[in-house]
Length: 154
Length: 185
Image (cartoon, rainbow over all chains, first blue to last red):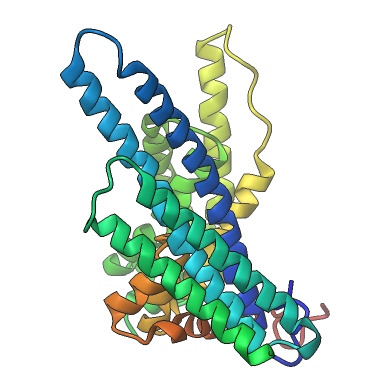
């Protein structure tokens, strides 16, 4: 919205708007994937107490928990992109829309933090796990983007 | 100028003159387009799509000399493909009397296919770097961070570079859709 409202003052506005739309579509898709993966993992957790075939069930549970960690990791990375894009918009868009762009960056940073937390609490993710490192890096990058633009506006 | 960069009209002119390499390029250039109409536009099976593909290019080979406007080869091929797809579906109906009725003409799908191929051709005119950036972000869903690391570019510049590439793509597409000089449109 911010980019679409700044076409005359910002040459890259249309290109930024197109990227924002692509990120929105990806986020909607990932939200569905995340919900499906989480439900599947919950069902596997519920089944894990049944007697018999413990090895097979444990393997299946681990596989589903892995999938349940993959979606929030992608969401964290996408949120970092969105925060970066929103920060770029806030720095270059028409003045009256800067606060909206800054708010979008802050919301994206919040989403990155929440997604990184979901990766962190997943039962298959251990200390030093690459997924955790990536999720935290995405949260960190998103926070820096949001802080950068909020500082400019203060 | 290599064959792959020749405008459609010039490629057709060379095909009509009997240039074997030009024929190969014509098939290569339009094969994905034809296949997309068959499978996405008309939901043909792979086997039926393959049959349409063979028949289509046989007809193009036989009838290309009847094409009056060499630049209009794409809509001509699209029309031939649509007819062959409809024939294939109708033939399936006759062989299976209890089959579902023929699907409606998938007008939106066909328009989307045309648009997608137009964009694809326009993207091919951009610099290698722009093609790479747009492909990674929009087709492969890569994050700015991944693009930055793999192309060894500063992370904070990726969004801006993609935006500039999109700007060039827009100019290219708008140039293609301009009416020719002297046109009444």
